[in-house]
Image (spheres, helix red, strand yellow):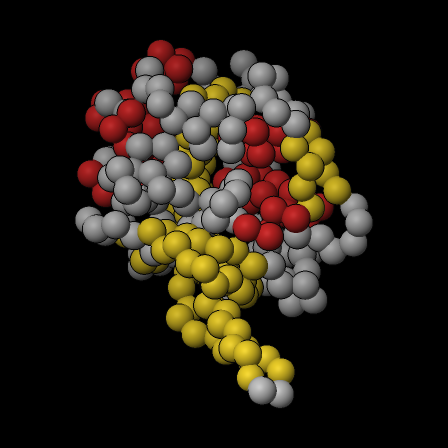
Length: 253
């Protein structure tokens, strides 16, 4: 039986989900997709999934028994990734702190709204450049920016690979001045049993990911289109980052 990814959320394939679904299609990966407004039926788990992705998908769409089964599969070696959004982590209606999934994630989820929406950009900084998720990417030469995220707290024994800091720009009489403040975790990874787990605090599709969706450098672009979805065109470094992130979770790297 061929292994597959189970991807839940990001509204629908005709919406934000087109980005990650288009990337996985361009890589030749097999996946099952569940829209944000549909429940995850237990029968979907009859397939051999080696990575579970929840992105802007409310915890209420999973029956507790289904969530427990996913955690058990992670303990046996499957990967688990949560990507940020209004219905990720706690968010606004995500409520993952009330799900068994929370125990397997590498971050602690609070019981209050953890969304950060800002009219100022957040600058991305690499914390451990040798990790396979973030290696061979131009973090220092061409640092990306994001526009929003969920506040997450790394659990003990996990690794923070990426951080973000608020970039504020002030106009002065002689020009402009930039200041940096408020460091927060952006990407945290860990393990749960035999499985690899990751939490990415921003989203994968506009609006929070902002200009990172076009992260280069250079003119090279990546295109893709999943069945039933809109086509996408994104920056090459953005595509490489998510390929490395999902590959690590699946133990392909």
